[in-house]
Image (cartoon, rainbow, N blue to C red; front, side, top):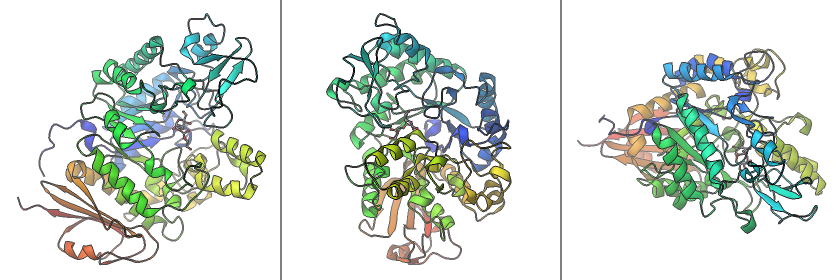
Length: 545
Ligand code: TEU
C-alpha cells in the first residue's frame, strides 16, 4: 500500500455516535452518564473507531433530551461534572479516540441565562439575542409551524411580542444576525477547543440564518457567510473534525459546507437518502416502501458530485432515525445477514462512516405496547396531533413503530443480564426485550457476529486507501435487488456487491472477479453469480503496477 498523502487525520476515520442518556449508567439512576462512557472506552477501542460524537451532555432541562441547552459551558449533573468530561477526553485520547462535541447553535433552552434576560424587557442587552416580532395576542406574525408541532411563534404577554422557535416552545431560536451572539458562540467553541476536544458536530446548522419574515428557515442568504466566519474564528485554529448537520443540503451547497479548502466544515451530514421511504411531499410518518433504484441513484449522485469537491458522511442510523436493520433489512430471519449487508454497502463508499450505538450489534426497532411507553417529544406531539385530527390510532402506532426516534433511544444492549447491563436502577426508557439474544457480550465472543463484521470493516478502511480516494461507479443501476459498485484508484479496484433483498438474486458480473481477493463477505463459502438473501461481498483486485 502506498503512503497516505498528507491527508487530514480524519479522512480515514470512523466515527461512533453515543447518545449519552442511553449508553451506560454508572450510578443507578437509570440514565446513562459520562463515567459510564469512560467505563466502555475499551469496547470502542476494540471496535476500531477513531472518534466519538457525543450527543449533548451540557446543562439542559431535557425538553428535547439535551438539544435544549441552558449552559454551553457546563455539564448537566445527570451526566456528571466538567471534571468527568475532562477525564473522558483524556482517557479517550490514551486510546487514540477523539471526542466530538455536539453544538446546538440554532437555539438554546428557554432556561438559558440569555433567554431569561432577553424576556425581561425589550431594552435588555440580551433581548436581541433571540428573534422577536411585535404583535397582538392571537395574531401570529405568520403561519410558520414548529418542527415538533404547533406554531413557530410563542407569545410573551409582558413584552407584547412573539419569539420564534423552529423546534419546541422551550427551544427559542438564536438571532445570528446579531454579531454579539456570534461572538459569544465563537468564544464558547474556543473554550471547548482549549479543553482538548477533537471536533464538533453542528446541529441543524443549515437553519441558523433564518429569515422568518420571508418564511426562510434553512439555507438563508447569509448562511455561508456566517459559517465561514465561524470556521475562521474557531475551527481553523485547531486540527479538528467538524461535521454540519443539514437536512436542507443538496449536492451544490454541500460543496460549500465541505469544501476541501476547509473554509466551513470537514464534512456534511445530509439526509436525502433517509427521506426516500416516505410519501412525496408528506412527513416521515407517512410511510412508503423504499424505492430501491432511487436509493442507488441518490447515493451514486452524492458520490459523483462530491468526488474531489467535498466530503460526505456515510450513515444509516442516528438518534433521530429508526434502526436500519428494521427499516431496510430484515430484523427477523436474516437479521445478522442484512445488518452486515447494509454495513458493507455504506462503508464501501467515499466519505466518513458513522456507527450509531448498537448498530454494530444489529440492534432493532422496538414495539412498545402503547404510546405511554414512549418518551420522545416529537413522537408524543405527533401522536396527540394526529389523534386530534381524526387519524386511526392503530395507523398512528404503525408510523410510530416504523419511524419514532425512540427506536434508536432504547438502552444499549451490553449483556443478557438485568436491563441489558445498562443500569442497576430503572431505565428512563425501557430496554428492548430482545437484549437476551442481541447484546455486546455474546457478539464480542463470536467471530461471525455483526460486531465482529463491523470491526473488520473499520480495520479495512485503514488498510486500503481505495476506501478514501477510489472513484465510485454504480453498476447494474436498474436492478431491483442488487446494489453493486466499484471504487477505482491507482492501486487497484474494489467491487462491492450486495443483494438488498430476502430472495436469491442473479449477479453475472461476479464471474469477472473470480481471482479477486475477498476483503469481507457475510456468508461462508464462495460467492457465486447467484447471491443468497442479503448476501454481500467486497472484492479487491490490485492494479498492474
Ligand atoms: O435534528 C434535526 C431535525 O431537524 C430533527 O428534528 C428531525 O427533523 C427529526 O428528528 C426527524 O425525525 C437535530 C437533532 O439531531 C435532534 O435530535 C434535535 O431534536 C433537533 O435537531 C433540535 O435540536
